[in-house]
Length: 513
Figure 1 (cartoon, rainbow, N blue to C red):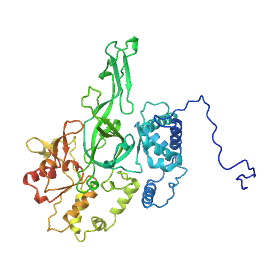
Figure 2: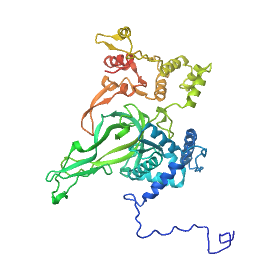
Figure 3: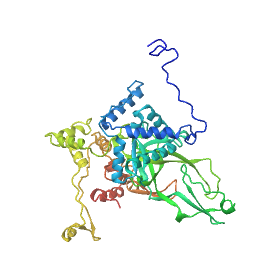
Figure 4: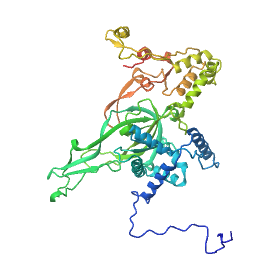
């Protein structure tokens, strides 16, 4: 190669690629609202990603991601490529579409780690998705429906892309006006959830003067009411009224998310935020679940009177949820994602562990390793954590079994619980509270509270006024939040007799009334 950079020595050539030819002046270019991002660029990049990305072993991606995040924090350099997948594998997301076709589900989960590390063009799409989620997600939905129809023919399935697992997790206290209308990821504990609410999707409006009808769809989270009637020369202003029985609605649920105790700064109360869930993710979480939420951070004005257009300067903020992911207790402070369901490989590892002759000693040593000697106490705690088989009453049991299950005068039938309760008694400084803390971290739905400041209402449920709807709602207590988990109560002897009586039914029948 010559000094001019061409193989044939022509000085009029260089290594820089030629710029693309200019578009004809009469060609229309569609861009996303408020940006200079071309729609064709988004759809082309996402379509190529869906057709080309092949799955890499999940553990490799997670370990590689953890190494990258650590390198970023320490200012070190790292390789910017994911582990190379097997080229003989089928495209990962085309396999998901195949499963969707068989199950007739509507949600397509998009792991944004795949999108970020696949190629430079998809990394740019990842940045656009974080900054302009309302526009990008709509284009992704359209693109994936076109690919689905290409492989499986025309379908009426309303496929929706649900992105999750972004590289950064925001804190509730750090959300600011700069985050409005952008994609955020939050972690916390579900405090309460509302019943299903019908949410207007397509409004059917009718003119009260001439009877003309007009429909208005949701746009950026809002539905605009028609102001002027142009039908048949009517010309009436503000004459449209909403016809409820001809409008289209979708399921909606209000969820309250609160910071976990480990993330609350010393001396401060836990922060909380309102979430709105829609469609198929309604009722996917329950109070007490530790979740990772991906959604759009929004702000809406407060109106002193709903019938007036005057708004207050103070806005209320909330998150429109796109994806829920239940995480384990030890994962709340981690950047990795762990699947809550056991894989075949994990099941085989557990079976191999169970065959070891010293499995009890190994598990005992793994529980609270900083606490020495208390092996018998640890084994009792392990028996509580593992539990046994619960004897649930079947509906087809004969009358003799029914008579044996009847308790009390009301004929209420009970189930035999399969786990035990643990009471730790000892002198001060014998690691009772440390053991409680370890169990609280291990249990997937563990709740830690102190008996000295607990009341009967605080342990079960209390009636409070919701700040959003101003309705009276039940605030879940420690026993309710730890359902299907472990409730750790310290200073049990400091509780009053009235408060302790609340625990009798919960410990024996595992119900709260």
